[in-house]
Image (cartoon, rainbow, N blue to C red; front, side):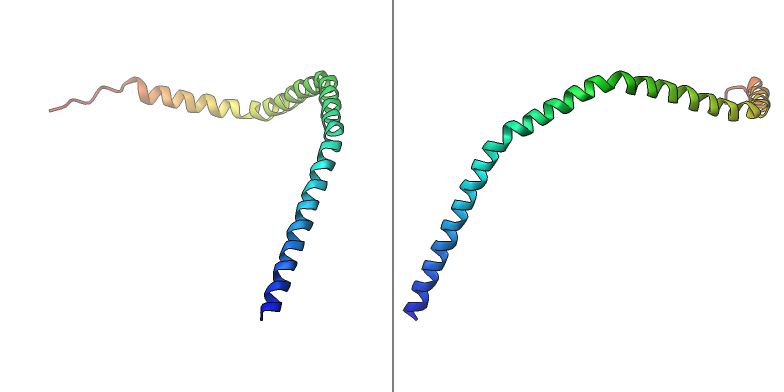
Length: 101
């Protein structure tokens, strides 16, 4: 029974040491790779700055194209909207305020 307890203690210590070594190796790799990751982010930021004017142009052109398309579909509804506005005006022009007792 005491032998199993000693074996468990040795195994647990071995796993803890292996985990510690793995953590140190991961930290060293992270420190080595970090400058390259920061350089990659910098290159992406510069690429975004170069692409930004083209993105703005495409966004404006898309808004114009889709806006004109929406307007083309809305023009046939204008007579119906005008009739609805006229009916609203007729109903609301003779409205008197309600009297309270």
